[in-house]
Amino acid sequence: MRVLGIETSCDETAVAVVDDGRKILSNLLAEQAHLHERFGGVVPEVASRAHLENINPLITMALTEAGTWTDGIDAVAVTVGPGLVGALLVGIAAAKALALTLDVPFIGVNHLEGHIYANVLEHGPMEEPYVAFLVSGGHTMLVHVPSPFTYELLGQTLDDAAGEAFDKVARFLGLGFPGGPALDRLARKGDPKAVRFPRAATERGFDFSLSGLKTAVVRYVKAERARGGPATPVEDLAASFQEAVVDVQVAKTIAAAKDTGAGTVVLGGGVVANTRLRELLAKEASARGLRLLVPPVELCTDNAAMIASAGFYRLGRGERTPLEVGASPSLPLA
Ligand code: KG4
Ligand code: ZN
Image 1 (tube, rainbow, N blue to C red):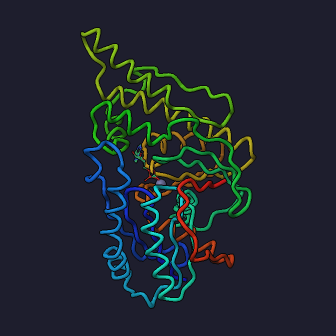
Image 2: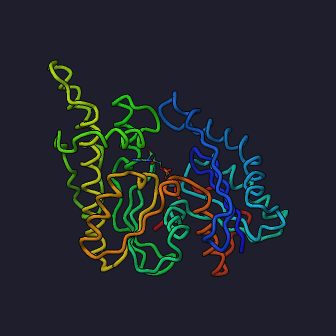
Image 3: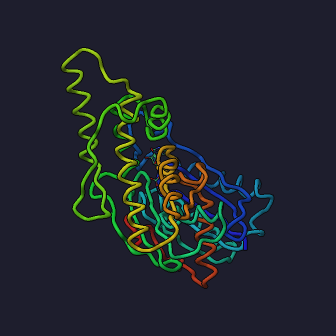
């Protein structure tokens, strides 16, 4: 079954064609970062308009690159939430129109489920039970998956999502937008032990909190500037902040696997592109005999191949989404 996937939940217009949930025939992205950069964050109205301009040409290009045309498409999958409502609607409208005119099945996909299924594109079908750690610009979440499409929330962020915190601290350090990848690159040249930033102790075992850490970085830098004299190199600040984030993430993810008895840990979301997170989790998982599934970096950030893959598995269970479906900006996974 050949699925055309569409993803427009945030600031990337993405279209992909995937065979049997696994084989990527095309996976295209029209990035918008340059449009949002001067605002220091994604502007919803700007994102929607760019999606509108990009979506139709991108569908044509994705079909062409896949070496097929609309008659070669067996189903259409699209992100229906969570995300920016105006942005989601552009992808949903395009997907509905395609499914209706081609008279093929239509399936709505949860964006977070897509991030989990990015792993299938790389590693093949996943075996439950597993613990999924989802970290992106909008989410930080630990989920237990005892059987296919059953999600039990173990914990989530009480304030900032990890990607959001990376972006905010990067912006404060003057690294541009989106700052996560820039901060990661800089941190590789820094000393993670230069500054001991606080590790958030949250009340509930698997919840996360990052606003305190973010404030601590800002306070530290401002106090240093006020004092004058030698300042901590920005590489060291980046590495120390990143270490404080990743330390807690890795500890909680490993603890969640232990707690649930799941032998496999699955990662998903843009922040999984982070070098230190990948490195430390690989080390800790292997030390405990846990199987770790990590998507390649280009499939960690938003893309449509992951949506096509998740859609394929839902369609395989006979699921269909009615064409009346709308956008769900805060669609829960669990
Ligand atoms: O999953 P994603 O592409 O979009 C959302 O669904 O939010 O995640 C984007 C987020 C951004 O906040 C970006 O700064 C962060 O992922 N990110 C990173 C890295 N690459 C992307 N954060 C830390 N290190 C990275 N290498
Ligand atoms: Zn995402």
